[in-house]
Length: 353
Image 1 (cartoon, helix red, strand yellow):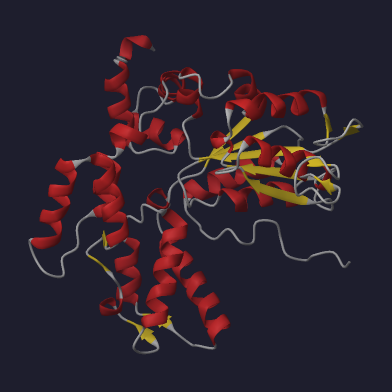
Image 2 (tube, rainbow, N blue to C red):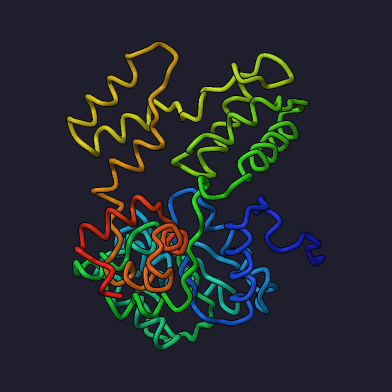
């Protein structure tokens, strides 16, 4: 097979300082075989960064294998990762190699690592410690050599404190943590990404659409709580419904920096309770065509349930940032408001540092 001429990380688009910083870290980390934990909100491109690390490493000619651990039971996950022998369980009609075997010599990405059950965490830890495994239903010990990259949008420190995630597994996978910035912290990257997604749409659909400058200006002011994934969805939907080859602001379901997403509004309302629902209802009905400011609303009101930062992680970031909340927020991949909220919840004062 001819060697690919595509440069590592070509899929990652942007010129912002926040993006360049994590790209540099990823390139440095790629030189070693240390386990990496990619952190960040949903839709920030963790899989692309895992592939960048693999393609920039000495393992780049070996397999890059990935598995999303979410919603898989311990039994299914064990079979997927470790493989199984014929007859190991009902439906096992043939021998199957697991993802560890398939990734031998290369890189294994375990996405949504924070969702695996306590039962399976112990089994995974053993394989990571000893570098060997047995297939389900098998007795032969197999040696495996993989570079492990894990990804999560969960606060694992809080999960460890709550007894939901093993501390020993956490330290095993969190050797080199990299926090990916949300789209709202990547100044100037939204227009570049939107252009990329539109070019892809044009190629796939034989179109020649383009954005009017005013349209890109509006997009750049949007929050996009779903980050790159939401921007891609918005671009594709807008392009599909565009009435002419030039996409003007009227073609967007987004105006004045406000993301118009009924599904997102509903999800946020369900999370924050009746008070939020009433607030959303007011935002939707006060004036026709003026959508609720869902991006800011989600960041501020859902914080109480999903935005609390673990105490130890927060203290380390604040110490590194010299008690400057904005700098700590960048280190943590959070907003200054979330940092301030977490400081108050934990009762942390400056004298701690």
